Image 1: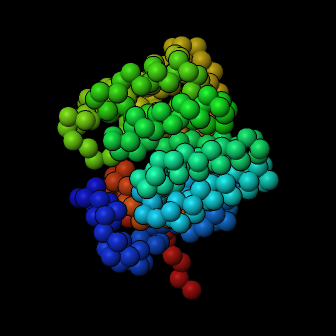
Image 2 (image 1 turned 90 degrees about the horizontal axis):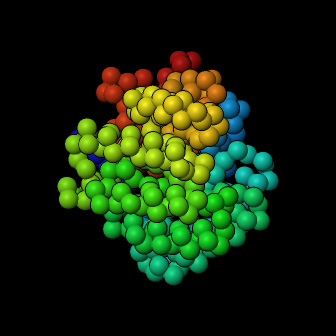
Amino acid sequence: MIRKAALLIARNSWFRKAILGLPVLRDLAGRFVGGKDLASGLATVRGLNARGLKGSLNFHGMHAESIAEAQTAIDQAIDALQAIGADRLDAHVSVKLTKIGFDLDPALAEAGLRRILDCAARTGGFVRLDMEEAVYVEDTLRMFEAMLSQYGPERVGIVIQSYLRHRRQDLDRLMALGASIRLVKGGYREARDVVLHRRVEIDTAFHEDIERLLRQGHAPAIATHDAEAVAWTKTVQKRLGLGQDAFEFQMLLGVKPDLQARLREEGYAVRCYVPYGGDWATHLVGCLRRLPMDLLGAARPHRTKG
């Protein structure tokens, strides 16, 4: 039900506008979304840093429909990198190729990404290239590899999705290049011949990839809210004799904050994905489907009388 709602919001601009006006969603957005603009997103990151958590800023949305929209997303990433550097925040910037114009013109997206990474090189920043639907995977990897060869793993990283059926070699391909990899289970609705659909298969693939990445990866990030996957990561880390600083956990802002705080108290690095501006409604619905139904009431901010 929640997944279908997310798709409806993403594809129907009229419905999205109506949803954005609902007070309950605007209340919930305060927990899961960094704010309506970069200033709000930066303020959210400062709050995370004060609690010992890292941030990853993302001007939220996908599939820019105009060159102007793509240019805005490019400028937002550059502004975010400049602000992070100036304020010495512990944060990265995350970018989706379709948000910076890949659907309109791949050359436009590549030029925009180079502008973003040039700024990262000047400011000492880092940019994570998000992975999108399966049809974009190979193009994303090729563009990433070109950027990696020019800017290095200190400036640009990539995301790999474990649930893809026919892409298991991608992890080895990227680890061999010394890439900085963010590992996720995967979250897009895809055909059964493209991705694993059974929970046990997805979990098994993710656990296998976690171990491979911890064995051979370069400053890997394990992105999960799954307590079993977190426990497995710790088990592998200890079995391999790795320090807690050999990798970091990554989670969405507002999802399982108690788990985030506990991991930080145990000495692990935790980075929160902080979306702001853009199309925040689809991100919000995606966050809600990660919460048990009995916690949805608790997710809504409490209002005091008076």
